[in-house]
Image 1: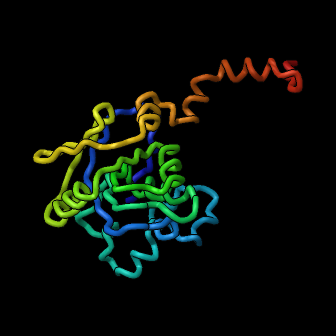
Image 2: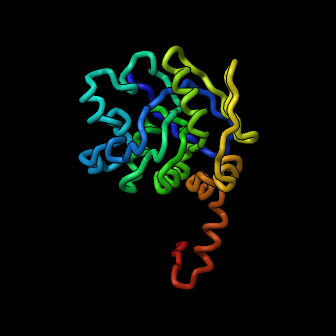
Length: 205
């Protein structure tokens, strides 16, 4: 039975979830979602195809296939994650697989921006902290609670001070990242603007 995808909406300040780790620097968008899946007319089916080539190569041993990682929602990565082409399908595929936040050493700029635009915060930590988390995940499950106000990630025996761009942080705390919801909240202003435009006339008859 498939789980219905529920997208993030509006402002939020906390993310709780189980962690899943991917090892390796420079994991590009073509690995995250191969080019053959870009012809889709919407993003709904992309979750099942995330890392499709890598998963086929590893024959069930890829982190996104392991039974122990089912239900994970916080992705731990290394440096320059999301490099390569600017395809927005990459963060869309991760989101639809179940990823709600990403913590890494560093991110490609366009990938980072595409994540913010769909409500997936990207945080950075020093290499040693990422290594500590990944080593911990080798032995046991890790559930983190991310606090955007404090920019921290906490577990029972761990606490990390996360880095995130101040502008991105404010967008999540205010809900400004969610352009669709902002438009729906301001329909009166939109209608007023339309009525003020001299080249748009409505026939009310």
